Image 1 (tube, rainbow, N blue to C red):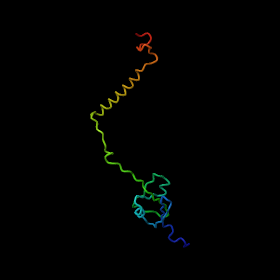
Image 2 (image 1 turned 30 degrees about the horizontal axis):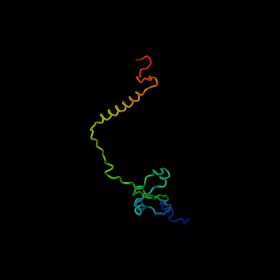
Image 3 (image 1 turned 180 degrees about the vertical axis):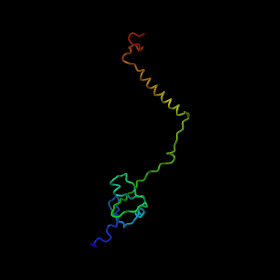
Length: 135
């Protein structure tokens, strides 16, 4: 009856390599991640339910007794150079959007017109394009 004194007052944290450690509750997420910069805690139930889309726990959130949490490192996002992301190309030709659209429509039409000009099998061999009975 008295063999289990204080049991069930700990939360278990598992690292990515399978190593686990226990924390006495009440403990906060910040108590765990302060020793592991760049790491976050995930609730095991959220990982089971949402997989890789599980959201990290908030730093002020309290860990619950008898629960398992995962301590994982967030991947680093490569920083893009400022010059590349704001690069703009200016053309010497000043055209409005309406003019560009009209130009595009004309270029498409001219390509389709060229495909209609191809000689068909009904044209004569003399190259005039006149069909039978035409002059």
